[in-house]
Image (cartoon, rainbow, N blue to C red; front, side, top):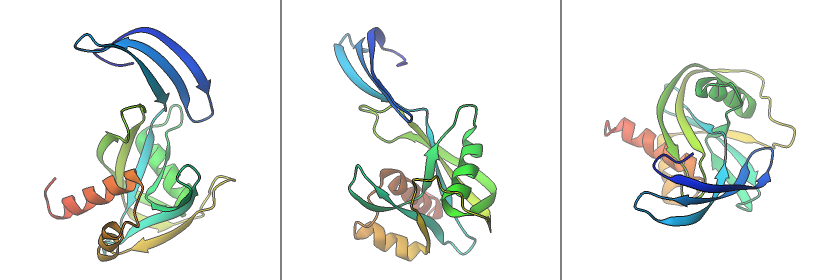
Length: 180
């Protein structure tokens, strides 16, 4: 799994539908021998849906681990055999009821690499058209369009607490300033 580390022993603790938990005994670069708890995830996509007038579509859903409703960018897991662009199209349709004519990969990142191996793929979605939303049976999602000014205010006032959404919106504002 880890390039540059030597896995001495690996023990699967839990295998669920979305994640696995394992404990690895490793020797890391520099010779440190240590046990590492690792949550394994197959990867995910984060979709930044934008209209030509600059508005961005966010979804609001209850997140049990956080204990609250959060405004987020549409996102979800990459299924076996799926490419990030295919997963982004599926998640956008499922969660928002929109399709995109184009997807532009922005970059990949790890949300919490101290214990989680999930790689997140951030893609910008443009050329949006309405379609039928197809949320999963257990999902209760509502969506809303937000102007850049509204998004900046939400960021300043702590209304955006989700890491992938913070990354996506910061990227958007840096792109607009041509800083990345």
